[in-house]
Structure formats: structure tokens, C-alpha cells
Image (cartoon, rainbow, N blue to C red; front, top):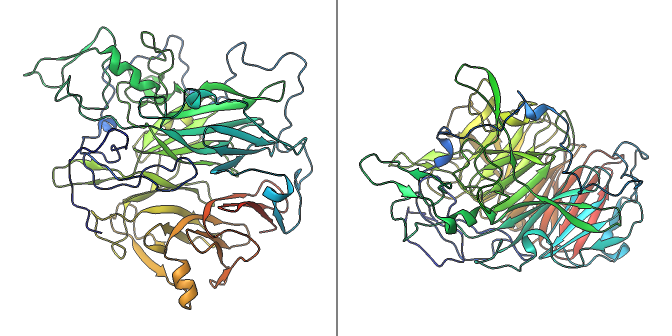
Length: 526
């Protein structure tokens, strides 16, 4: 597909900000039980996220490194009632966990689960489910599923372009009894009332924004301030009564930086403005920019030093979450002929064997070695966050300006990297050097016509502890690339369309969750 740069504006229902400085035809976010189910849209805008913060002050009493402390406690009043037994930690139970250890278990049939578009597992092995405006959890203690009695959080007012969200997208488990729910929303386009204003820039109260000294400044708009309320992430939890409730709409930004004298400080920016008491996810380096609006992917770190952290991919980049705090954002990019950054929708997220974060968007991919300090995430200094791959593509797949449509990025135990595309199949990627824009790719086509057809469209990848790579296809079910690099169909899993793969090594035997159009199946022992 030849993706020429274009700047035409489509209807307000579809999203458009998916590139820093340009746009083609991205796949819109998965909502309402579907993947890539909407019309494409696009528009060119500069990437405000790479600019320094021109005036956001830290809150009084800010600590040197907010990212190293434990998960912050919810505000008073959001805790369960006194005397409530807490959810068990992941390590407090038997090593096999609370669920069946059979090699294959159809959870949808065994636990009477209704449909789900996404799932996640928290630290207490509760299995979280997302179905449109409903959130469910299959509890590890009762082994019964509980659903929200009515929509909560961003779903409470219904979905639509004039609501808090156009739909729900993903769900990831967090600490015991907690989950993170992603939502999509419309993009911000050029505002007819403020021609020339960067669409994602929100002027704060009592400010007048003047990016060009030769032009009049842009005044504060209460209408535009409401954009902060749209999309992003809800944090939900099980309360003392066993109900799923909103803990808070994620909004506590942290960023490790220094003051004018070189002393460490944590930049948080304001957490409320005028009558907007929750700003959601906005750029950690400058709260004025509301760029990460729609959440397209999420992954929970389930092994290693950063176990429990959550990463979410958006229409603009990748945000790191720890507890109720986030740091936003970073993204692999390329520069168009105007010098504008191009960063595609991020659908592909993975955690490498050594804890590196694997990022793959519509065009590019990157590999980041994060520091243990949460607030360092958006720091592009390579001495802070080294990158094994900075911003790269595979020329064997497409030209630089062509969509590769990556949907999965994994590293197997033998150290090899694999990328899965919804349009271009399965590729092994070999790193040349970190700053090389063109890494080396080899396509895995399969040994026969059935395998070649199966690998055409890929929705998800999962590397497992036995050295395998599981491949979730769009039309041919689940496949496995064995440690010997042979392909085989996993016939024990029903469904032709794999929506999601989640590998959990915290239990013994390890568990691979496979969500398909026929339900949820779990494989143990991989």
C-alpha cells in the first residue's frame, strides 16, 4: 500500500492524531469487540511532545524521585472498609496458582464466561475481562465471575464522539484486585475558533499562548479545557463488598528532571485546572499537550525487576504506569520531508527476556532498556534509557513511509526477536546497530500452503519459557513456532480469530491465556 502523506480531515467520529507531524491511513483503535473496525483518518501536526516544558512547576514538597517509591495509596475514602481482608499477593499462594493445571482448559465453558474483547491478570491471579461498557473479573478466591452492575468511569455516560470515550479498548491487571482499562476517543483537529493553534495544545486558565511573537496569542478556552477528560485510562478495583468500582481516572504524572541549579526534582504539573479536577494522561514534560488520547494496547510486566509496572500504547506513544502514577511518553519515529516526526499508532508492546520494553507501531519499532525509576521513562538521553534499537523499520517489508502494521513484538528465550504484522505476516528481526534506521528482517513463510496462508495476518505474539513463539492469527487460529523453528497448528484452542495472547510465568506450570472469537482458553506448561 502506497501511503502518501495527506492532510484531509474526515468526520469527527474517527481519530486522526497518530503521527507526529504527518498522517496517512492508520488503523483505528479496537473497540466494541473488534480489531481495526473503523475507517482510517489522518492529519499532519508537529510533535509537541519533544519540546521542553516551558513553565510547568512541580507541586510543593516534591520528592527527588517519585518513581522509586512503592505504589501510592489511594486517597482517603477510596480504601476498603476497616477489617476487610486484603487480596493475597501473587506469591502467597501455591506455586501453581489458583487455576486448573491441566494442559488445556476452556475457561469460557468451565466458568461460564460471556464474550470479552480483552483480558488481563492481576497480582492475585484474578482474571479481568472487558466487554464494551462492562468490566468483569473472574475472582481467584471464589472462582466466580463478577461484572459491573452499570457502566463506570469513562463508560458511565455512554460512548460517542461527544462523550468521555468512543469505546473501550484494552484491560491490564495491576496489583492485587486492581486493573487498568483503556479507552479511545476522537482526535483533536484544528479548531475553527483558534486557527493556527496546535490542535493538541490546551491553553490553561489565566494564560495566553504565543508560539509566534509576530502573531497574537491564543487565549484560554473553557470549551477546549474539557478535552482533558476524554479517553485515556481508568483504574478500577474490587472493593470491600466484592464489587468492581472506579478507583480513579489515571492522572498523576511524574517526571524526573532538574531545577535551574541542577538539583533533582520531580515535575508533576497541575492535577486540576478550573472545573476540570482530573486532567487524565497528558504529556509529562508539558501538561498543555494532550497527545496520548486513545489507548490501543497494554502490557503488564510479569517478570524481572519491574514486575507490576504497566505500559500502554496510544495513538501517539507509550506511557509507563506504576500504581496510580504515570510517565508519558516516548515513541520510535521517522522524519518526513518537512522534518516533522512521524510516530504511528502503537499496537505492538512486549517485554524482552531481560526486561527491555519492545515497542512496535504502524511504521517503526524500538527497544528501550528502562531505568528502575518510573519518572525517567520519557527521558530520551541514551545514558538514562539506553536503546538497543532507537527508531527502525525493516526495508525488506516496505519503504520507510509505508505501513508495516505491527501488532506484536516478542523475544524468544534464544534471544531472537520477532515482529508480527496484520498485513505482512511474521518476521524475524536482527539488530545491526542501535541507531541504524534500517534493521534486517527475514520473513517466515511456512513450509506449505496452509502455513503460508495462516501467517498472512497476525494479531498477537507471545514468547514462552520453553523457547516457543505462539502466533495469534486473524483467520487461522493459534500457531506455534517451536524451539526447533518448525511451525505447528495448536488445534486444542477453538476459534479462528485470536484477539489476544498473554503469557504468565509467575505460576508453575506457566500459563498462556488465549482469547479468541470463541472465548478464553488457557494452556499450562509452556
